[in-house]
Amino acid sequence: MHEELPQFSDVQAAMQRIAPYVHHTPVMQSSHLSKVLGMTVMFKCENLQKVGAFKARGACNAVFALDAKQVASGVVTHSSGNHAAALARAAALRGAPAYVVMPTNAPEVKKTAVRGFGGQIVECEPTLIAREREAKALMDKTGATLVHPYDDVWVIAGQGTAVLEMVDQCEQPEVYLAPVGGGGLLTGSALSVRALWPGTRVIGVEPLGADDAARGFRAGERVCGASPKTIADGLRGELSARTFSLMRRDVDEVLTVSEASIIEAMRLIWHHLKIVIEPSAAVPVAALLEGQVKADRAAVLLSGGNVDFSLLSSWFG
Amino acid sequence: MHEELPQFSDVQAAMQRIAPYVHHTPVMQSSHLSKVLGMTVMFKCENLQKVGAFKARGACNAVFALDAKQVASGVVTHSSGNHAAALARAAALRGAPAYVVMPTNAPEVKKTAVRGFGGQIVECEPTLIAREREAKALMDKTGATLVHPYDDVWVIAGQGTAVLEMVDQCEQPEVYLAPVGGGGLLTGSALSVRALWPGTRVIGVEPLGADDAARGFRAGERVCGASPKTIADGLRGELSARTFSLMRRDVDEVLTVSEASIIEAMRLIWHHLKIVIEPSAAVPVAALLEGQVKADRAAVLLSGGNVDFSLLSSWFG
Image 1 (cartoon, helix red, strand yellow):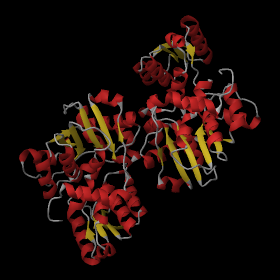
Image 2 (cartoon, helix red, strand yellow):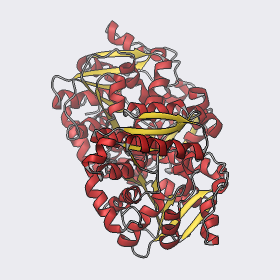
Image 3 (cartoon, chains in turn brown, cyan):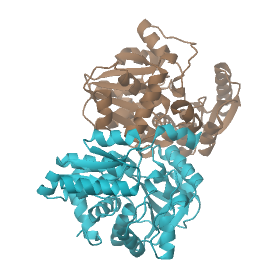
Image 4 (cartoon, helix red, strand yellow):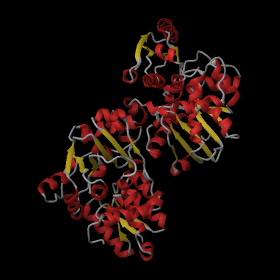
């Protein structure tokens, strides 16, 4: 299945596989916030997910789909974000070694998270080429299976399970919004929306400073090698050929938002829902705040809540 | 009943009365946080309550206990904190006028919250005498019923309903911790703990800079007229004769914590539970963080989540 595109049945299988290992996260609403945003908005709180992000879903699905021999050899990835911690956790749950390639300049707090789950960090130069080369070397040496943060059928199917849960938690919305970085969450979500909420528009949102998905979506050709600049650190990746194909097939629209709107959207969520979300999670809310979406009822996936508190004063100060 | 002390049966009646108007808030846990605090800790999330604080419970109980004639004349209070917004909301739900006496220097954000629920603000000089005089004048003029933030049997009984919910949400803890300011939450909670979790110790926690309850508890005599100094703005009030009596009867211990611990506890909750709590809510967590409580299993009431975001840099900067 790894060479192909995932199907909705893969999302259903993922739900069965990961249910014991992830939270069934709540859907929240606030009448005040709906008033501010001009429509009823339902928020799927993946910031309250294990490891503080939806990434727990895809990582668990990939790891629990391994066979016994693969488990013994372990898994490897080259993310420095939420996926790294999610993969280390999933591997620990199955007793598999986890190798995480991280640049030498990765924040200490992220290394600590990976080590806290027993993951082994392998440092490399802070370039994409060095990361991929180091991951390849580790696979050759250990026989570990690569679990890419988003260019992976199991991972994409796992991310789609959040919407699967939502169907029992709220009414069908006119629009569903998720952030787009590498595209795993957006395209996995779209598989579920297409199957379960026919007629609902699927909208990806990204920062204007990291608008490769929006440009590629409009042009019909994937944009590579851009230099993203945004506080939404989870959305700095670029689509793979696989997630780009899925996006073109299943997503209705890709919007971009300003950094100022991201910060204001983050503040609004903290203030009205009393929950902590990271900048990347605020990006779809920013699109509503900017009045870019016309609807009476929207569903938004809040992707994560891992915040570097030393940055707060630069956001809200 | 207003001249007497509330009973557990009043808490049970309050639960019936207010259930349609308040959230059944979740109880959260985090294995990481339990590790940091050295025991299993269950958090009752009243920051996710209506108006962002447990105050919605007591205010609703007081307002929905009024008879038709009292409803027509309305309610009055002289709180400038969460109780003011909670009372305005409760009154609006019953179609009763709400008058809130606030000092001229009250923060604009708090006035906005009261007005948002249709409450009428009456300004006065920023002294306790002026506040009480103005409230009395309003009662004489309008016939409105005073709903004191904590020196009120209905309010105390209402605050006790949070623990009533917890009994179905988690195992019995060895200790139950709540913050203490005016004492309404602590003593209302204690009524429920005594009835439903016999053997559980009830601990009140307050900032060292507002330690009137702790000193009064030790001395056996109420401390009045202190000048509290703490970032926990919800805990600057002092006990009434009524809440002092209840505390002496039903509470096992009153602890004090430092301002630094309050900030660190607040940061820990934001970081590990991904929820926003205000400084007052962090106070019981600070006692656990300081190692003042010996237990394997604790329950903590997180009292509210109304934060002035302009202060963040002074806390976490």
